[in-house]
Every structure is written in structure tokens, then in C-alpha cells.
Length: 396
Image 1 (tube, rainbow, N blue to C red):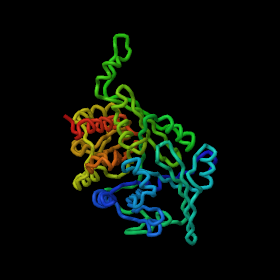
Image 2 (image 1 turned 90 degrees about the vertical axis):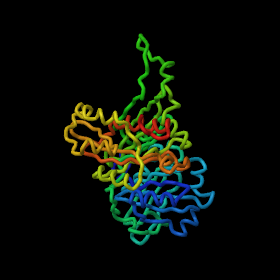
Image 3 (image 1 turned 60 degrees about the vertical axis):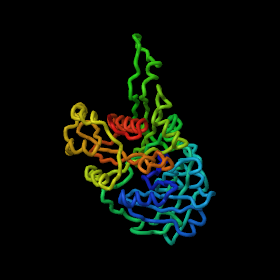
Image 4 (image 1 turned 120 degrees about the horizontal axis):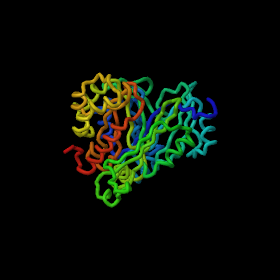
């Protein structure tokens, strides 16, 4: 690894903390067709004070933990937040080189690196603090180590390989975080991780009315119920790992759904994780058949879609627009490269429980376009805002 790169190879897993492990187990196994691939062994459970189960689909691994003792990491997280992502893990080629890279850039290590050998297999990892509140980033080097992590026991299909998923879930496409101000987060991605700008967007759901001089009429704008955001996507050009970060915009800064996320989460944090599939129409049809609920999109989005696709130069969408509208799947892109995506309801809405948290999943199929899409981004923002305002997300 050269000295000007972190050595990240891709996503390894993410660690989700919940109060109700049985509910999570049902969601992943029955609704999302994940397989149970590992669980914390008795010794690790006793030492950590928390029960942990790992679910897998394709290359996606989510470790779900619930506290058994107040002194556990899971318990401390839940004392400050509802259910949510406590850490993200990344595969690296050479942990020593990654640590040297991070240390030179001011990375804050949370402890000495962990190293475990089992015969010729070796597992090494280290965690660093992030500007996302209590979310840590872990860097993992695996040398022939097929278990999920030290102290975990394979169960079901086991951690190695790619557990088949009927929806075709393959891997993590990107991760999105919300904060009240994004610059410390974006600067950290750049200065500590060495990431580069990939995409950005800024908009408001209601235009600010201007007076005759062209200046914004903030008094009138303040009466509007809309709000706005700014988003910047940073990426690692080598591994293609991408992080999107959102912040609220004025007017009505405190009414923004980004602000509401931070309030509900108790701090900045991971808003959603996108999972890639090959056939999103099939995937969403089946997910809806299993009772999974998605954010609603107004009819106006699909009524304007043919004209918008023409302006974007997209003429090769193979999916039927009527089918996309029926399933509420969004389309965006440019110059005959497009993507299809849809967003699940927030966990608190899915489970009718505020302690389930404001996190949600995205399902995405890329057909040549690697961006994030202005139209879809705005449609998501407006959908969340409608839901927070009405409790249903339904368009009038």
C-alpha cells in the first residue's frame, strides 16, 4: 500500500444495537431473507455483557447486539440513543500500514489493536473515534480468518462465503449520515481518511420568496412549512467506498427532517445504509409481499418522470414506468446511465416504537449510473418530511 492511501478494500460489516433482539431477528430472517451466520460464544457474551447475532446476505454482514448488563457497550449506547448503528467496519490489506496512515493524519485510536491467531489464520482490528457521536470506525485485517470475529461461533450457513438472498442483495452500496453541521464530518473524511469529494447537492422544498430587489424575504419564508438540506458525498476512489453527509438548511432549519433525525437519534449518526440488488422490481415486489413498508412517493413524481428522463438523456430504461410507479421505485441518472432506488420506512415507523430509532435501509440497483440523483434525493427528503408532518407519509 502506498503512503497516500488508507488501504481500505471495502466494507466488512456494521454493528447495530437494539433493545429487542427477537424483533430484529424476525426482521432480518423473515422479512429480509438474511441468514444467521454467527453468534457470540458464551465466553464473549459473559465478557462483553451483551448478546450478539450476525446476519448475512451476499457480502452484507450486520451484527446485532442487545445488552445483558448495564456496563456493556450496547447498554451505554442505548442510554444515550435509540437503536442504531454503533460502528462501521472496513476490510484493509495491512493494518499496520492503515494505522500509520491514520496516525499521521490525526486519527484518534480508541484502544490498542486486537490481534488473534487461530493456527495459520489471523484476525487484527483497531477502532477510531469519528465526528458521528458514538459511532466508531473499525479497520479489520483478515488472513485466512473466516469467522466473523474472535469470540464468535459460526451458525447456520456460517460467515464465510456469500449467503444467498432471494431478493438478490449483494453488498453495501453507500452509507449516509446526518448532522447539524457537516463540515467537521466532511473534513474528517478528507483529512483523516483521505477521501475525496464525489457529489453534492443543496435544495429547499419551498423556494424562498424574494422581494423586488431580489433579496430573500425570510419573514415570509419562515411561514412556509418546507425545509432544506445540503449533502456532500465523499469517496475513496480505490475501494469506491462512499459516505454521504446531510445537514439542514435555513429557513426553518429546526424543522428540517435532518434536524429531527439528530433530535430523535440523540446526536449525529448513521441515517441509512443502501444495499445493492440486481433486479429491484423483483426484490421490492417480494419485500412488499412480506409486509415490508416503504416511504411513499407522490403521484406528481411519476407524472413528471417521462419528461425528466428525456431532459436527463435517459432513453434506455428497461423497466416499465407503470411498474415502477406501482412499486414506488425512483429513477435517476444521466446520458443513458441510470439507477433505481427505494427507501424503507424508518425503523420507529416500521415497528411503531420510538426506541427503534430513525434509521432506515435503502435498496438500490445501478444501471451504469454511480451518482446519487438530484430528483431522487429530493423525493426522499420530501417523503420523510411528509411522514414526520402527517405520520403517514401519504401524498394528498
